[in-house]
Length: 227
Image (tube, rainbow, N blue to C red; front, side):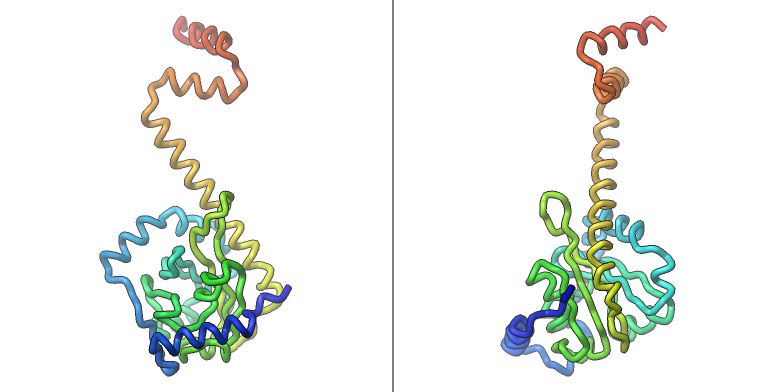
């Protein structure tokens, strides 16, 4: 399956970058959250970050791939990679809280995935700024059941072409993160409900979940009280 960014979309992005006044020689992102705003972002997206860590297997990060997680606005929330690759991304000026929007980094896979709402592969020469001139990047939106985009996942390599199997893995990874995210959210919501319920209400819900009818529930509760 071909996830390469269409040429017309790249040209449109280049035009926007030029109009914004982004320097193609830019070597660091132009937009970054301050520590207070970053802390707020991380707290707001804590379930998404947890789902990311649960979904990206440790064996994957021992190689040459970088895994980047952003929120729905393109701000970097978390990374997973080997120590060698971690040094590379730090040298590129990447820190939690940097923005991958065009206004910050020029044309890149995450900014194009944000625009096209689908998986996008951007090769080194297709990036607008020097920041990514050695990077092969493929990004995908993380979409939950109701169709809402919760964030973006990016898999990147430096000086190495993205393997064909990775192009398929990123779709599966985005789906897995979305699934884990929904499980975490539902579990937390259920726990919050349980805290607000008294013992009898919890017992009633448990019996209803087992298929008990009202008379059966009343009888079961009566028997519980007699014990």
